[in-house]
Image 1 (cartoon, helix red, strand yellow):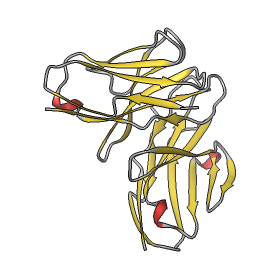
Image 2 (tube, chains in turn blue, yellow; image 1 turned 180 degrees about the vertical axis):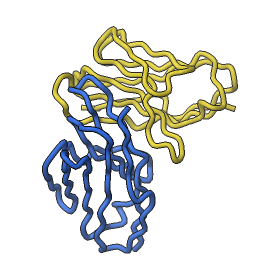
Image 3 (tube, rainbow over the protein chains, first blue to last red; image 1 turned 90 degrees about the vertical axis):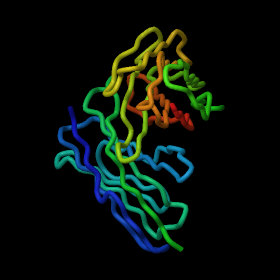
Length: 110
Length: 113
């Protein structure tokens, strides 16, 4: 099956710093989503981004489908950005489940 | 609009006991999923359903059963709980044929002693 690798596994930032999280996948995909799991365990969908670039406030994401990677940018990080960021991909046409990477754990220090 | 609701939120079982986790969604989504999350392992798919009356196995289905008798509900059963099933369980749902966002419930923390 499709493999999803996220890097780095852990990241510590000072508040106000910028960061880039990477997601590599082993096959062509029709669906790619980024999620944030906050320190209380809640999973929030950040982006649906199978290709191109999207922005939502301080967060933006870019997927280069032909090169099989996606990047999540966090600018001016805040302590509330702490948690685990997951990338998930789907090869099929909507009737196959998303496959998750193991995540990047981000700690933002005040 | 509640979204995806999981019950219970916490549960402690003894080895060999059985239980059912309930997932309910009020968004009329076709697809529903059960994942488990263990430290360092990310989210692994247990079972999923692409519509009422259908179920399919995921990556780690052993020891679990599921049912989708109604479109809005997806039940996960443990017939004889084992300590290896200690985990956090997440239910998720999304619309059908369009590849739209996946929405998660708040999780169930299960400990098997």
